[in-house]
Image (cartoon, rainbow, N blue to C red; front, side):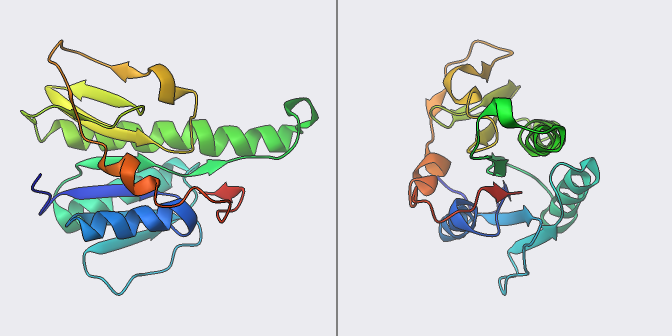
Length: 189
């Protein structure tokens, strides 16, 4: 697959799986827009970093706008940012719930909606999807990968607006399998 010129957005990209995804995408020729609260600039001109909290809709707007301004397009979104609190749900405080909901649901919504709007402009003819991850079709197929933010979506969330068969393109899934250790902290957004 020719990936030259393609652009991937990776949330939760400052460390752990997110940082490995940025590296994997670059090794495959993608240009990358990487975002996280504590992300630092890379020395690579083909990586744009946007610091911010993905639960804030302004961060999502900045990420997509900066990606389009710098690279002219968005091809893939990896929703890697996610919060896990190591305590029973029944012990969550209102603040805990707001944190989890903000990153894992609201952040997913804000950036995914904006990224899909940009991807739809490309009017792809080739269908692709990442196995066991969310794929939304719009004319062709828009690839949106859910890594950590919405695990429940990984089972049954292929949203299709047409009936064209999809072929498997597990690049992001393979890149994510580089490390599944516990090196990532509980909060990465």
